[in-house]
Length: 243
Ligand code: SAH
Image (cartoon, rainbow, N blue to C red; front, top):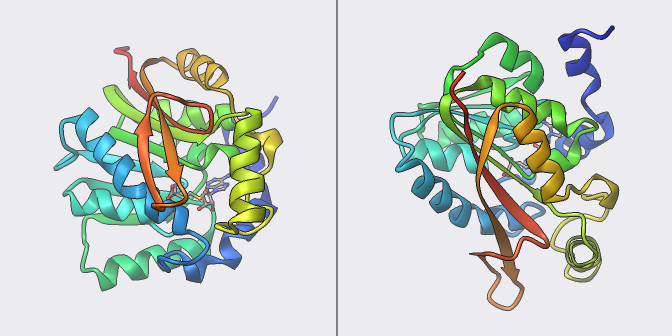
């Protein structure tokens, strides 16, 4: 029988983490490999702000925080943020950037989500896990960890790529091969997640799904916006049920 820490150690694709580590220095290059994340960040931050009635003075866990694009903007809105990831080089960049930006209410740890949740059950008002589930071997285990770390009635936000033909065309052919917005090999279609699947995992781990919304990219204006269609990239917003 496998223990939780076994699961934690196995729930990582080392090639994925290495891929992020190898481009860690470009996390804060607004025109670099992470340009799409910088572009979509304001839209997701306002959505989180709206659904939480403001993140200020709330404890917030960001799972798969990378270089801190989301974590730092939520800290700027006065949330008390902990970012976790397994890519050490990315975390070093995140720490350095917070230091340069003089942001003190964010801290970063290199730890598996499963291990962290075991150590901090029911502690966070808000948990975010964005653009990360499609990079791990066992996304359900990350969903379970997010639910575990969250307080009863706390709010959880996942975002990932839907498994549709349109998503394949836009995220892999469009973004990687035509527009060259992100490096080739950033995404693997097999790992994309249908909303029905993510909803099933969320409900299995004590979450109530409140809303799903699509993140749409307009290559002409280079802007993202939120729309009801969840064919490609989408956010699933959940609330943790009372025990
Ligand atoms: N959430 C951030 C970064 C998304 S990029 C944002 O939206 O801005 C995906 C991140 O997931 C990378 O930082 C990568 O290192 C991380 N990641 C991949 N596999 C992981 C794992 N098993 N555990 C924790 N983080 C992981």
